[in-house]
Image (cartoon, rainbow, N blue to C red):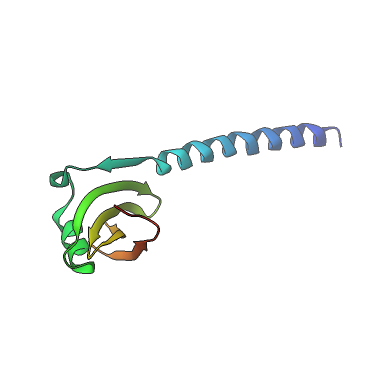
Length: 104
């Protein structure tokens, strides 16, 4: 029974250390890179955006590195509306969203 408090302290420290590491990893994955130079974006991503929203004029792209890979959030305008398109690095379109409340 004397070792039980020591075990609890050890487990508490282990949980704290693990939690700190998880927070660091999450911060790393939450980093976003904003790109306006479209030559730095893979063509498969740009083509997928143009196919998802015909006539889109791409304004910028946010690059997110996540646990499921690199995700490109493409922002642009077409037909008087602003769009956000979430695309995987292989060109898979995950989501097309019309941004409401935004005006010129």
